[in-house]
Structures are given as C-alpha cells and as structure tokens.
Amino acid sequence: MMGSRNIYNTILEAVTAKKKLLAILIDPEKFDLEKASEFLRNLPSETTHLFIGGSTVPRGLTHQVVETIKLYTAKTIVLFPGDVSQITESADALLYLSLFSGDNPEYLVGQQIKAVPLLRSIQIEIIPTGYILVDGGNGSAVATVTRTRPIPQHEIQRIVDTAVAAELSGKKLIYLEAGSGARIAIIPEIISEVKKELQIPLIVGGGIRTADQVRAAYDAGADMVVIGTAFENGNSLKLKN
Ligand code: 1GP
Image: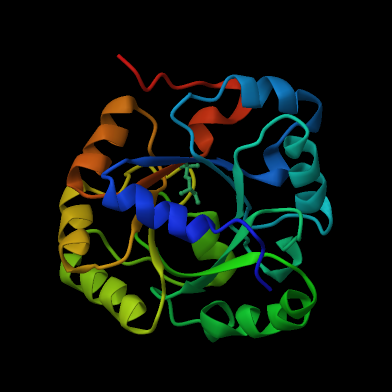
C-alpha cells in the first residue's frame, strides 16, 4: 500500500523548516482536460501540491484527470476523494479522510472500510487525515453529500476539540474545511486556536480567494492552504504583490 516517495515526510520537513505549502485543488468534474497544460502553466509558482477530488465525480474520471496532468507536471499529486470510487493508483498519495465534524458513520469510517480491498492491491501512500467541516456561510457540497452539519465558526472550542480528537485518534494531518466556494473562509482565530493544540500539520481550505486571505491563514498557523474555485474557469490569483 506504500509508494516510494514519502509525501508525508516532505510535509513534515516543510513544517519544521517553516516553509508554507500551497495546494491547488482540481475537481475532476469541473476540469477541462483539453486545457490541462494551460491550466498547469498558469498556476502560481508557490504551488507545492495538486489535490484531486470532488464531492461527486463520475467513476473513472479522477484517474483520467490524474493521468492527463501527469503529462504536464512533476508536482506532487494527492487524492482528496469524496468517496472510494475516486481512488486511483496514478496519484502519489491519498488523503485517507475521516469526517470528524459530522455524525455520519459512512464518512467517518464506512468509506474507509470500503476502500480497503482496493488499497490492498495498489501502491499509494496513505495519509490518515482528520477532516473537519466548518460553516462557510452558504451551504456546501460536502455537507449535502455527507448529510452532516458543519460546525458553526463561533463554536471555536468545539472545532479545537474535534481537531484534537482526530489527532489523538492517530490522524497525521488535520484539514479544516469551509467548503468549496465558501462565502466565509475559516477565520484566522479558529486557525490559530486549533494550531496551538496540534502537533501535526494543519491544512486550511474553502473560500480562500485573495493573496491577503492566504497570508492571513499562514500567519494564523496554517501549514498548507488549499485553493480550488479561485483557479477554476480560467480565473487566476496573484499571490505575489
Ligand atoms: C474545497 O478546501 C477546498 O474542498 C477549496 O475550496 O474551492 O473554495 O477554494 P475553494
């Protein structure tokens, strides 16, 4: 089940070196394969990882997207799957997500069990990740698909406790998610309160559209920021001033 590159260790090394990480999220359903090369060329030079995944992706499409982007980039490709059907050996690593914020066992452990027969037969680095959905103010595909309620942003202690519970359960990363296209990204205060109590790297995503928001998330303690929507449909975001 383990590939040769150790993606998790490179994340840990970056955190130790205080180097911030930037993942661009590609949702296979919204990705134009014909424009893959142009899309990848236009990504910011700060990009360290490509995340691939979505809430509802037709079977086989994730594999096709990963194979296509590998033609044009050597960047690390990490699966961020909405469900087991999005797992493909073509990627470098898999975020083995457990939705800790919700009370739907299917996304806490059900999908994880269903993935095992496939994971047993392929070579991919598996990174156990505590996934925490926080309210981004406009509903989210994650909440709809998983039939779970996001944690309101004012319930900071509950968010912190949920993240710590995930770490104590053995997760190696925490992903604080406001949902793709969130109106309100995770506020810096939440990021810093969570970060204070974590020993493991912290990923933050959902609704981040500006360089200022990226900087604020980093300054508050995010080790990696994930941006999807701001780069879709030919949009672009300049990170440097
Ligand atoms: C969604 O956190 C990611 O899972 C990215 O969100 O599309 O809003 O950038 P955006």
